Image (tube, rainbow, N blue to C red; front, side):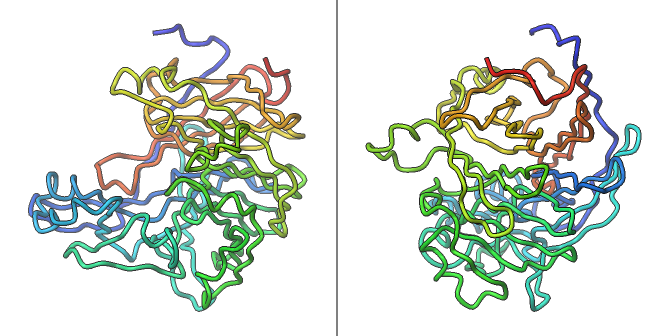
Length: 392
């Protein structure tokens, strides 16, 4: 193992996941806890240490674990359905959570479930139409299909604006949700030409995103979203390169597209390409099992000021934080931190927010505790401000 860098300090913060539900299965009780580690954001003007977090679509199980770990043998017939998921508690869906970091402890201040204009809670089901409904068919514990939803989403990232509103990244569509301060979804930005499937939704559907974003790999839409300090620009990154490979798209092959959007309207302003590292350089993952380009993903981004972003690139066990400057079509990366050098940092790192110019808050995604995992928070303190420096 490499020596730990002397100019970085890692502190695991105290946090206890809240229990939301318990579902009886043949192998015992399935404990469902609050999920909030998918994305983190600071709001300008909030008190020091106050952070907003978001969980993903809600608790879900793959067919294999549902049968093998929980004894739900009647679901084995679904094993051949590609991407099929079991939602043991479908009423638990996307929600915003306000947190406060105080000393070495993280406390929950409030939980804000996402709702549409009718007051109905958002759920974790895919939307209707096209591959959205087919990408991950959802079933309840009995094996009955749950179908699709106009108020569905797989929320994975969030930014908080000074006016109290939020922009929430959804990896299904992909889409961006415009959310009011009370958690009501006011609008949904979707790729150009993709709005018809959401007709009748209880929010505005605005087909303003780049049409190429609709070609994201299934369930690899937007996870990373960052807000410029002046709150005029939104930076969103697809988790993976487009699929399938377009022979005319040499610039985008093996790279994730990063779009800069108008933060008020969603209109595209610029496009960049983020190049991935070689899969084998994610050491913990490569030691555990074979890895390849399809395993790479972008899970979070945060603005460092100016045209600089901090980007979280990962597989599962290993995560790398890179600083990039939006000054060329293909971005050049400067490594800031690799969790291969810090074995105390858990797998599935997904949330990231600046607490100060040299203090970073990181979080893992516990997937609502369905596999017995707990959310972990880390404060990373650097000897110098994160912004600045020239890419190498």
